[in-house]
Image (cartoon, rainbow over all chains, first blue to last red; front, side, top):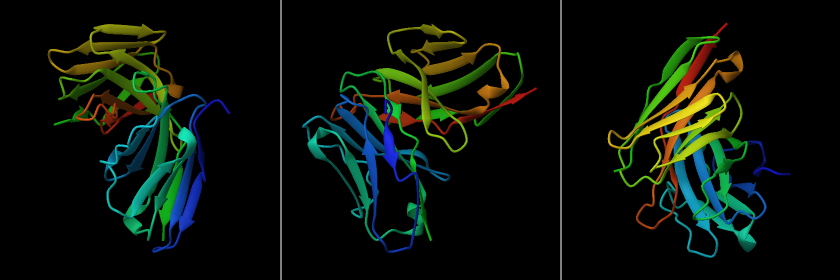
Length: 114
Length: 114
């Protein structure tokens, strides 16, 4: 498709399980971002990838969170040993690059930890 | 530090103009953005403005930027019921590592009454 694609759109998991969330950025976009949206915290920056540069992981809330981007395209956000406070919408965005002005978001992955 | 503030709620009548305000703290902001979020959906990029501009108009949308006061506004002319949504202001700053990440406000819920 033409936009940022995320999967799964909804995920319910049991506390303590690991989850993987996937993001397909817009074709040709070199920058990719992960954000988390929850009721109490608003929109939080998690991690940013730009081309072959080292990712900016400054927003990851704990070492249970990690992300990778393979081949400069698809990204996977992994949450290990999920906790109830991880319940949120995880939003992915992409942009043409460090000088790209437009940043487009996907529809999000709704994660519920029970 | 980086901080973006918005009022939480705005109610207008259909056909009136809506003005959503935003203040930010980082004077090194490069671009400022407005996003719209409808229930259950991701963030839709509405418009953005470069920090050396004062105004940008795009159909019914007018963005005003007062860089001296670090104040940004979004005016929606002839507001329609379909404009009812949450509107997020965001600043993009170079940051310490030139990440270009977005810092979001809490969002303003716009209610349009018929």
